[in-house]
Length: 257
Image (cartoon, rainbow, N blue to C red):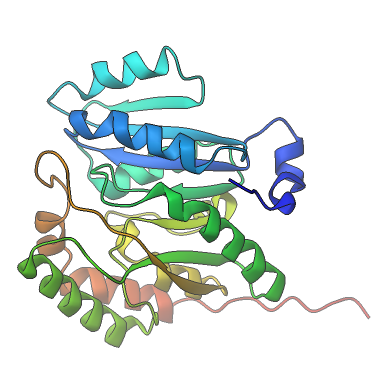
């Protein structure tokens, strides 16, 4: 892979820290872990990175699978919740654990493609240069490999969310997103935050860039995040984020004369 030289000239990559941390929340996804970790390593070859798996209280062999891989792969960091806290809780734990300047989030079922991350990182650098910051690069699954019911549910949810929050993002539910760690840590944290990141980045004075990404069929198991989460993310959550939008004015810093 030809890596753009500017990836390696970022100040963060010269301070003994990875440039990017890939955060993967998982709940009972043992068979999907090895191939996804291999794919992340191939996709980010030549880019200083670390992989953070947050085991959200899995009941299968996820802990032992991660332990076995971590013994031979120093870039893998594993964190385990004693009990499931949900996808957003796992993402927040992963971001807090991360050392990279940039964070890429991936669903743990292997449907997101890590090969899209380098292009998203480059898009983030371009967007930061153009301003305003902070920048969220949001994946847009233009060809989804899900059931008809799941696709239609997402379309309705995206339409309602877009109408109420004006986030201008066609696929807020895509697990593949990229942003600066420091920007994420400035956001208000709450359950299901991962579904409202576009609106929250805009609220913080930044903007969102949606980029087309690949989407694959699930190879093993069934979804443990998603359907129930979407049912719970109802009008109360939307109104709560809309309230946050109204109750904040982004300060404009005036330069010294």
